[in-house]
Length: 430
Image (cartoon, rainbow, N blue to C red; front, side, top):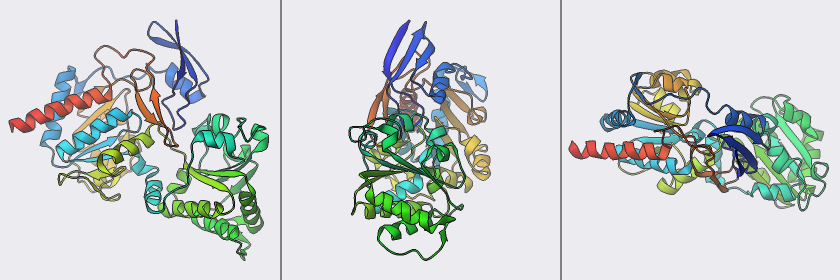
């Protein structure tokens, strides 16, 4: 048996780095410090795996599958490369280079989750800090439109709720936790204060809290279903905190208002910083979605929805985002890396995806893999391959390899490099 310590979990944006994984005979037999979701990911790692490369449902060798994928991309006029949030940064870099080579569009899953967050922060900036700062300093924690008790299970335990910090030595007793949501969740039951707001009322409530922080009297008895007294009380508590943080999720980004909701939240934090220290952090879901944005921005200047059809990068969410591109029927081929858009995209987009040749790089069987023309199994980053991922607060962390992949199974980055090499040969030959 081999015990790997300080292993980084490749599941959610927390990137917990204190796991212990026990391996026997190249098989994971035990986990320690992992949450229920993380433990399941490790212990059931070998279930539902893609058996081998296929083209049109027929088993082929890796080189034949790469050739087929390259031919699809070389002949396409409007190819889409999508996913990338559940793989490591090296693969993201290769995907961006491939998109430039074929004159296609590269997009990641933030276009259907925290895309509005990025749009708002590009316009108005942000006050942020690391999760370590939250652990050591924050005595007021607000969770808005998110449920870490079920989606980021160890977030409360390691960073935001329970841990004893340098300036919060009492841990949970020294912190006041607020949950804001349209329905009561497990997070609402954990919190000291739960505010149940009306659906799509986020912008109005944020604006009301901001007005109260500025000293304006709220005349309405309720705003978005929240009583005036609670709004004014929360505003005073925020102003009196030693340090506060607002964590927000898709409940804020995907309700009416979209990026304007985030704009209002940034404005609230800016106002609070006239009284105390306050920061804002999005609760990123996939373990490397922040890395997908960061690497794409390094290479193109833009975080997602990047079009190379003119030979240089252009950025326009709503036009070059995957759902919009597919729903309009513009994409004539797709490469999907570490994602399952067929299962999660709106009907029009998923339907068009089924009409075009799709190349899927993934570890496990999915709806997208089942409808793909070319399927190539790959090694799992953080379990079967090393790489770098970015935590939700923007801190890069090196993923560890604990077992060897099956014979002939390569990491995403290497498969993408092989496809690029073959595409260049086809283009030079043409």
